[in-house]
Image (cartoon, rainbow, N blue to C red; front, side, top):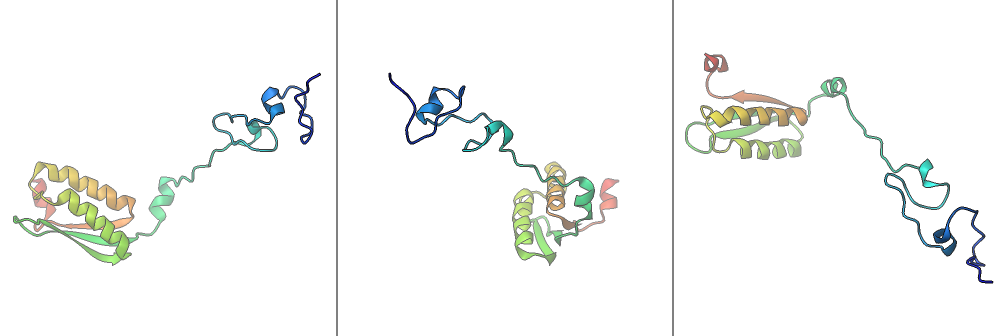
Length: 142
C-alpha cells in the first residue's frame, strides 16, 4: 500500500489535508500571518495604528516659526524666513511654500486658496506662520 507520510516528518493530525501531508506550503488567509505554530486565525498580521487625537496634537510645542513676506509686484513675489526652529524642517517648508506662491501676487484669486494650503501645511508641521503682505490685512477685507 502507498503511504503519503514522510518518514522524516511526524504524522499530521487528521483533517489537515493532503497538501500538509506532502509538506507544501498552505497560503495564508488575508489579514493573517503564515508560519509554523498554531493556526493562523490566532495571529493577525495587523499593526495597531498610532493615532494622535486633536487635543494631544494641539498640546505639542511648535517646531519652529516662519515668516512669509511679500516682496512686491516683480517676481519673485515671496520670501520665507525661518525665525526659529529646526533648519531642515524650515527649509523643507520653505520649498513647499515657495512652490505654491511663486508666481502669485496677493491680489490674485488663486492666492487665497494657496495661502490656506500653506497655512494647513504649517499646521501639520507644527510651525507658527506669520504673513507680511505689506499692508494691514483688516483693510484687505473691506
